Image (cartoon, rainbow, N blue to C red; front, side, top):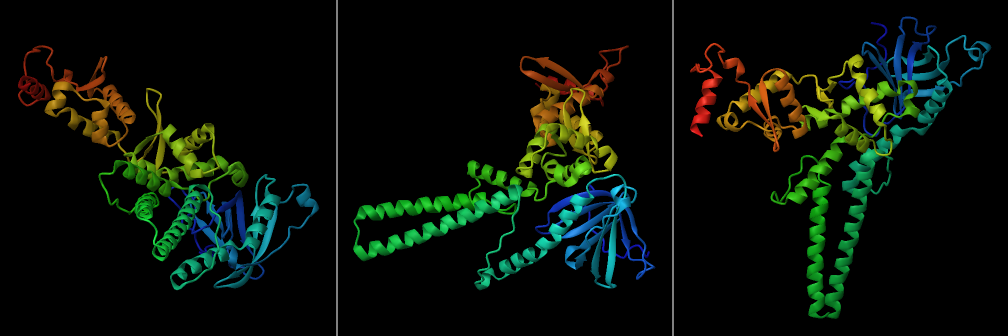
Length: 441
């Protein structure tokens, strides 16, 4: 098709562009057409009515049917200033932004961005577009990659790209630790030289030995805290270190480099926030067994966004948009009022089957199960396990016993009882298993 004259952009499962390296989203516009210069390229077709995302590296266009197009800012040779006309001042015609593009296969071509619909953001977009093009962040990213590649050969290029959120904080922390560690090593080397040169007393040697132990301990802690997700602890019995390593791994896995903001997204804020939240929630959902409390999501999401915090109302509104956006997760509200997010692939029938298997065990037939028991089996939080047990009760699969010790859930035996002969026990039924388990106790 002649319309596919621009390279495509890769999308996430929630239809958001996959960013590369240190690429950061800067601005969003809806109802955007991308038109070529028909005088020089009459066979090309336009891209019509899509959402345009401006990043520090690209222009990314996404249609409602998930068709995509991408324009690298590095290929743009000139941006034409917007023309002031009577029609544009009276909002009769759609605002337009023109720029010259050096196409890899077609050579030089003039491209026009046509902004359909009612919007006052075209002037702000032009400013952001111009700033991103002039900023040439892709060159900085390339220089950083070259510096890292040449670090082993003694390269001393010191270029740093600012990264917001948790990733930026962790980078600064690691640089601080490395600087401190080098300073301490240099200091102890100097101390060794002084000791050998001046013959210091044994007390100094004891001090040096203890100081070395402290430095080694600090280094082990630093390595564990700064270890990536694939690192393994050298001391599996050290629960405190393992816990800190898990926390660090979680932070590294959920950091958001380019958070959606009201300033950059404008009217598209909640829609883009909803898509970004759907992408973000994938890892926490996998860790939590396919379901996680909405309050926990709010805390994790805001922590990952760094300083760009969102309100609970924004989070709830973003979650309610998932039904319209066709993303792989959903918002669910239990009868008790607890709100959670869960993967659409998670089936209640599968969960109920695992609960049924648990309550049919001899010990469960005798004493029932608690929310903690179900949580261990389902590998989810006890609060979520309790909601599943209550849902299973409402389906007639379980019976609940309420006592001062809390809730205990038992398999529902009433369907097994023949009302005409309550003392008749079917030898192959659950009732018979229950009688056998209780009799054995």
